[in-house]
Image 1: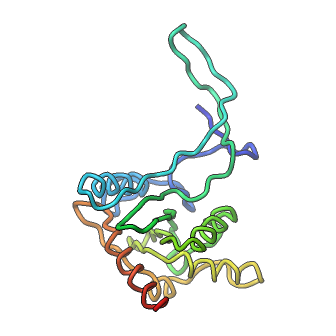
Image 2 (image 1 turned 90 degrees about the vertical axis):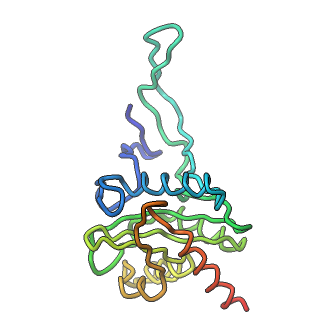
Length: 204
């Protein structure tokens, strides 16, 4: 079933990347989205956090009825641009984040984010939410939690004719690297703990 963005472009599905592909970082061929969904299911079952992928509302434009009791959706469009991919609650904190991948080795292209996603980060940060990007460098097989507040600084600079990417050295310095595990596959809550601690020190 084809699904389209509001501008009519076809939606390919999955985590937004510079190029859609399954990776073998920790889940043996699982996509980053699948690994995150598996990790979130583990966190939920263990009573550690409640984090889900946000459903995207769609407008159905074509439906076939091969049988009276069945309906098959043939074509649909996203009603509005989506915000970020994931949100939830962890130890009393509101979490909001997006997952991105790049095959670049030296930097993360800001074009992987969209203005409405950045605006959403800004709004959530204004409400004291814990917001971040989960960034995978596919070729390097490295994964980071990078604070949305730092991402916003680079985004603003890019709007003023600054560089259009975030250097890997910056992400290494101000982000938190995650190493794959068995359960969960992506143990990102440890990095979230570090992010919360860092923010507490800054506010203190």
